[in-house]
Length: 274
Image (cartoon, rainbow, N blue to C red; front, side, top):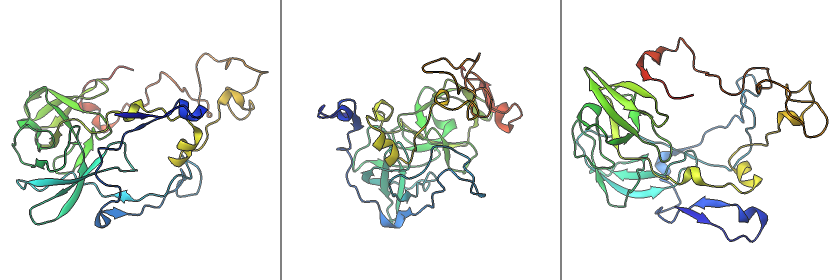
């Protein structure tokens, strides 16, 4: 759900934020947080390798667990905000009072009881092997290699669907439309990742982007021709090229960037639409 502000200023007029009223607390579990050093987009040599990064609000990283204890029920104790990810997270507690953070699913409630097992009840939040999940059921936090932990479908509002099973492989339809093979012994959570309204937010003002650690981006056509292929000219003018280019002269739109020799290409049954 989104919260819309009253138009008291020009920034407020266009601004919307996710309604956090469903969250149960603001302070994280102190035993499950660490401090990460931020590099502001620079590599080990100090050169900027990813542009437009820097600044941002101070924050702690929450340690998220995907490999839950097998055949042990856990209770949802808290639903919290995580500054490092788009989805919400849930604090769960096992019978021995051990706590862990996991990704929250859509419709989660305090007091929900979940379990990870090879075969479990088809209920949002439960984690089980792909081979035991019926076709057409939405899943998230999916492993690529058995026992490695969830790697795919972890951002807000996303889910994948099982479309077929063949020998040792399960065919998954990804949010992009791609169909990919995954080992049938990999685990996945039932349901859809929480915070489905995340992509519908309107930022409204530049300051919110700076709080996120995103620095200003200058248009290429506003630059000098030596600084960008789109640069130069007088006033408002087109880029003067057949297709947009990056600052280094490579294609910027409509070009596939996936390596043709990538090791996991053999797992793709059907490519997503460009």
